Length: 235
Image (tube, rainbow, N blue to C red):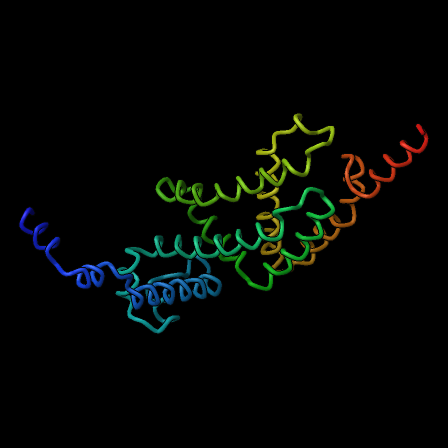
């Protein structure tokens, strides 16, 4: 081991740099495998996904799945990482400054429509539904949900801030409920054979009623008008 360390330290800098250079070809192959797994998951569902199906979808050797990921479940977790990372970044960009239900509802109506077009909600449901209750894989799902929980909790804190509910409701509970509701919309749509009209109607209803709820919370246009009227009366 000492001799190996000496030889390594004596190697020219260019040689050492080549040894630690990222394997771009390997990264491209991993991306290709993840994309193929996502396509197969959308098409066949978790129960129908296999190494052979993924390899056939991506037109590569089945052995590459094991070489780069070790197992199908590890590959599907990588798929979940990709989807979740991209989706969370998109949500953070659109909802990062939201502090009222009206603004949240309007943004969510757009985001939900985009999610349906991207077709990734089904893939997430397949992975989470299959792995969440597995003793070994369940903790992997929980750890990947934590960034979403943190994001939803911060969003809930901003929504109730300055309202009579501030300090009375646990933002963590609200955040968890919002995530459960959102994932539940996809489950209901799938139970209806892919019909998303009910889910879209629910989101639209939230958009319509959000300004009224904001008024009850002391936020929004209605609340501002009441505060202005009160000031005028006092003056």
